[in-house]
Image 1 (cartoon, rainbow, N blue to C red):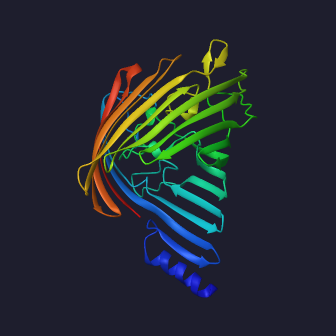
Image 2: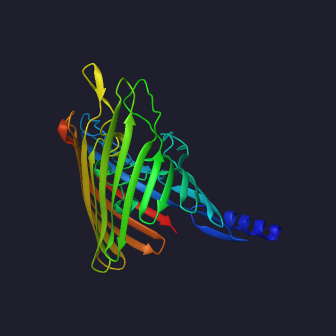
Image 3: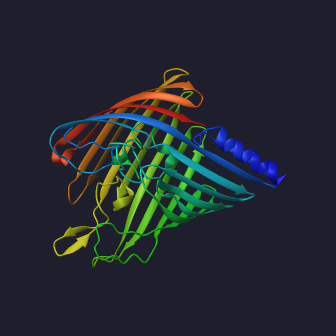
Length: 344
């Protein structure tokens, strides 16, 4: 029995590509699953904001430039092992380093997720409880309008009870030279699901105790995915408060200099996205995101629209055009991206 099971697993791994999903029933309530996808991107960026493989809320600007890049770096591989009520999951992609594009494109793998689930408990690294995956738009640019999103992965301990989730998450004060992160970040979220979709609200409480600052901060997230008609949907997210690194990555740090001391600043960020199915094969998403801070007066915004064709149940191709703007520096770049994705 053990020999035949091992042979089945080996045959599955070496007779097919690792991006496809395979599930093996090992008996006695044990299951092993491999998954992921391959994604090829051709991306052209033109403007005063330098090329990035996907836009975050960074404020880098420069002279007007134009760059095209072909990449497979978003491709990922994952594996999970389930034994009764216990499940372990690990996933990697290839954004670990910039590598070398001159000869062999040797990009390093990067740990994305690694966690254990048992009953209502989750322990390990995954998306923050403050981040609502359900509301993330379908875009070719990875993550879409990061400028309006709560977007963060980190190690945590999470408990789920019905529609409620409570978590203690890794404390890390960005922008601090002398860190004294002793108290975990606390996140609570409530999720309501119905026939019309899903809506939720989350709260984040942190104790910042670095670089001479000792302050309790809070931030709030409201999100939703509302079903429209038979297949269309409207997705949104609104973030307010002293969210720091949790919202609009690259926009601001958790604390910033203010004279002889350091202080947190408030961030207001949001996005809205509408997905429409033109037919069984074609669909589009139109999205817009915006973020700004109250002390440094940083402001970013992004919009985009795409057209995706479903070629087979597991293969799609698409094209997306959009714009990312560093409003406080009066600079922007337009991007055009073509993608092919194969997944189970």
